[in-house]
Image (cartoon, rainbow, N blue to C red; front, side, top):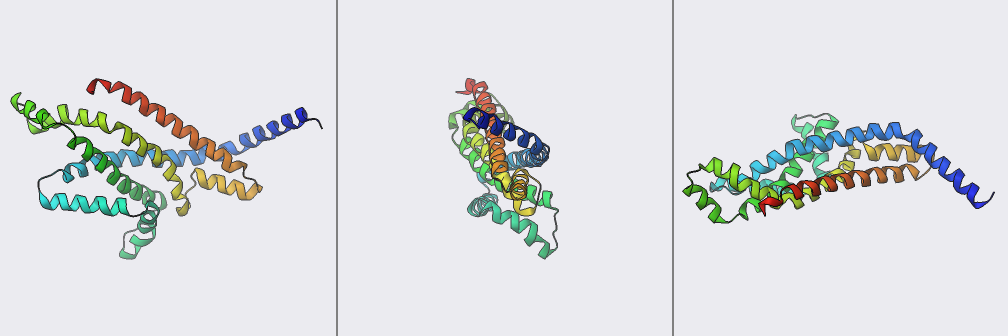
Length: 227
């Protein structure tokens, strides 16, 4: 067998194997994307609320949100997933596998988003507030129309980094037995005694992170008028 024939046979095998594995990959990708999207849906608004709590002049609210951020950022996400699914039932709070993962991810990422938004809001010059007051804007109008759009522009890069990290962190729910991408790859790897499934899964993750990075770059470009 010459080299060209070997290469053709190898490529044919890789293509056929990938096609064979694709239905399972798509199923696992669906679970991964669902967890990813729902986490963003809950974590970003919650993070903004917590950030406002951190900036509040009410000491109790400030201390509570600070403690929340310290605990959620200071402990591993994997530990939090285990605690929600295996620990909370001990006190009568029970979640199914996917809701448990969603709760843990949302609470964890809300803490990270909170610190990002807090830093962005705090970075806005005090003169912006004074100018809005002169224009007769209410505190709510000042925040929604002047402060938050500028802060949002400034926090886009770190928010984008967290979003990309979130895609990769979804693999941690493998510990709960959810049929996400990593579990699909691991099952196929054990069944076929091959590392090829994990390579395919790695490529899928690379494509996801690449697409998300491109989307965030486009969003950042559209907010350049706030510079």
